[in-house]
Length: 364
Image (tube, rainbow, N blue to C red; front, side, top):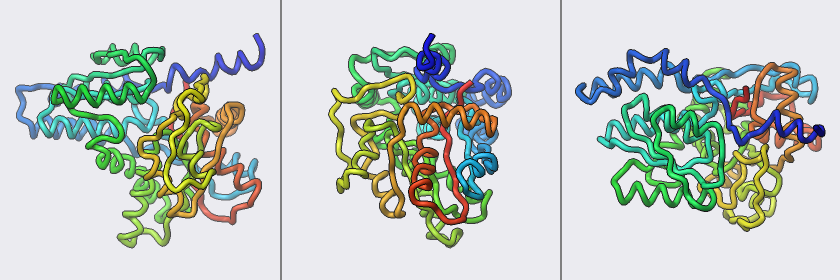
């Protein structure tokens, strides 16, 4: 087996992130029984589900990465590891928030499109809230995470075409059948952004101010927008002394947000779908259309941040570096923000300050 084949085998992203789904379900069994019991009054079910969220989702690990600091010549570089969420990614934040909202508003079914990780997050949240989950999956995607979804009671609907086609189908189904629409870019975008904004509050709790920079991988842009809005709220309330610069990293030439920033476009311009090619590494990052792209571009530009591309080779290298130097098992795609940050520092050295990198997925 060649070196490249070996790397692709070890770091295959088509299997998605890895979480601790079964252990989490066992840990919250008492609350789950109440939350899923339709004979209970709604307030009791909501209280039980809120207990699950409070104990299991968010408040993820943030550590100072002294070994990588030495590698790149910076002090006070922090990693916020979203892989600590139950299904192994930051997607749990919006999935559980929307399941809570669906339960509160009287829905019994949630519809969502996914390429894998978000589907597992939605499946788990719905199973713990007593909601039926419909996951719309692009027909050509094959991931072990589908087995997790099915095990959690999810109904899988395969859609011809790409992720954007699956989103359109899921939205239409939700509209036609009066289901809860948990897709990005829909009526619940504000709730999704608020859920991701909690990361900003957690970073503030650790540092007691905003860092100089927050860097993250970007796909649809919702995570980036949530971070920006969270810090904007803190700043407007006088909690922080400044806004952090927002930095985005994504797969080389395959993300509209990064491409539009580099090209100087005033708004987020779609890429040509036929030119998008997924690999075992870049799949969580690529899009020809970024649903919250305009909002993400605003976040980057309003904070004097930047966006940059990351190659598959670099993402594999940095994933290995994090494992060897810091003991974190991180999806290669999760390192795109770190790469955008470090490559900028190498060409235009950043001053001594505090910097935070968001790592969005765990690899077993």
